[in-house]
Image (cartoon, rainbow over all chains, first blue to last red; front, side):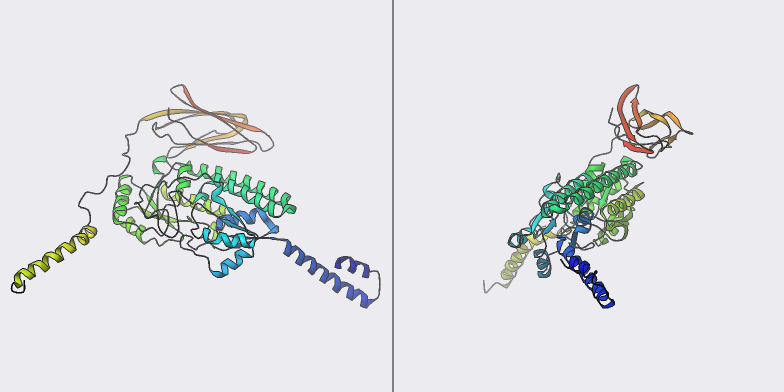
Length: 319
Length: 140
């Protein structure tokens, strides 16, 4: 309305009216801008990986708010009252699922009350059981509610493609006017993920199969191991809150010696103290720091970057 | 009881010892040897894998295997054959490459893997320009 009013004034003539005209045009654009801002889809994310997918698919139509940020240990994270308010103001909440966010059930009543749609990635992936071999039996009664199912599904690219499609559909449902944008962006992302999958296979083809043994802090890379033919041994269980037992560490040291494992890996949110102790006793080197529970920083700040960083570190250390 | 301090001392010591048993059981490491490493590694059974790359148009062809020298065509070629000796129980993957003239569309690269004349795998990859992929070899 204001835009049309401004154009009508343009015909009036005179320097004063021209100046008023320009001011009105300026305010008209501001008003239109605020309408566009109000029209964006507000998406809160408890997962750094899903936040990245949401940005890729949503583009300018979506405002993504990362509740759990890169570098934060999601295993020990609990939402603050401020986080709950931010989530309540959103239209969509993204969560990894499969027990990764132990507090999710506590959030559900608030989501229903505020009309926030919950999108759980774990609902559309092919879940696997914990596959690590070095892990001691651990207590499943801790607050993060992991079952035997491995919740770290993003280390399998086909799973990420499935979740990207799920996010596209959720955005299209919440904002039907943006369907064309969401579909085009999701198609582009899917093609890039397929290219990433081939890149990963080509990199790993240079790694002898006998060397495909991953020793990590906690059991987060099971999906990667299954997809790419790795055996996995971990100090802790599936959660960073699981404590390593001395028996488990002893078994791990034996395994590393028998298999002549060249390198073991720390994680971006972990204290690698126990791993350093293991390297001292086995002679294996510390191969680098992997992003396990979500995205990292720098080149690993995007999903594609994270996968490339992890694979490059693994190949370089185990070759 | 009051008149037998030695008996009292004995009873107190015995009580303390009994209380200490569960603590001792929980804190003492198991005397058993460390558990054996899982999955003993089998001795390698070597086999020779013959690989044949066939291109739909002349291309620079290459095949790479972990820990072995790669085979490459000297220039654009329609085919390339190479042999690799690998552990038959766990053969390595093949990384195959065909660099076609970018002006040629719908190029194909066929990769055939044989052991003692028997075809183990036969795959074809399509693309334009650089066609590259990984071939996983099944056990014979």
